[in-house]
Length: 341
Image 1: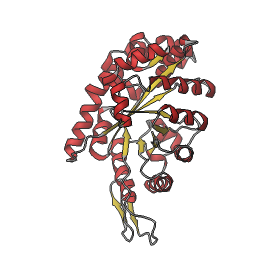
Image 2 (image 1 turned 90 degrees about the vertical axis):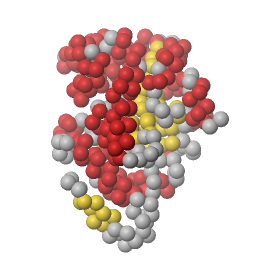
Image 3 (image 1 turned 180 degrees about the vertical axis):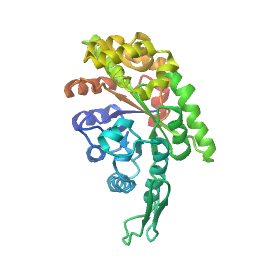
Image 4 (image 1 turned 135 degrees about the horizontal axis):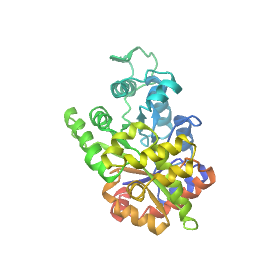
């Protein structure tokens, strides 16, 4: 497994590469664009695997996704992956102004249309005809040529995970993932989709791990991790995950606290069991032990050790990113596998 992290900024990233971090991803939200961030990553790294994890699939046309990837590939050949996510219902409807219905079917077709642009050879039309998208582009300029960049889908529930296995090259797991959710829900669904597609390769696995380490103030690190978990769980998309683990009671309490604006109450509603199953936090020693205990609950290919962002300032996030370097050799077998040594 490669040790990766969400882009921490140029200064921290230089230290991260020197420490052994070998992958960076660009996330997306209302105040930061995945592809602009990715351009910054490409310009300030030399060898790391890089890509959006994730870009909102429906905020751009397939053309826009593919041209961004082609542009960045010219700057960092062989280092890119493309991670796409369907986004929540209300983000599509209320923020992006796009149809929110049937996201699984829409993203499957989006992958096909993006690949039509990425796989097009010079002199060929770029064509795709589907239920949601129609492309018939005769590009009379020598700017194409097949580009094989892995396309991954953010997949939380089984339907999207099955689609990731069927139409994409793999899956990006959420920071909420637990051992049971990976092994009992997501991996079987991805494998089922991949088997049905007829492809022989094992689907790629990337995934986020909520990580907060502070030896001087471990209680604050734990509280930040609890708040991050609580913030994620305010979204009802994750209800099947909550029911799978039997966490309905704590989640109802944290959602009530969220509605009341009580962020401390949100954190307190996250139980010790939830914290242990989801996050890696506390002191360095505690985090290393927690990571070792979760060895079979981590993504096979790239794990992004992600500092909490909910009510956490940039300075503290940078400190959490640096403290995460201590985890790089916590799993010796996987560290050796990632570096090829």
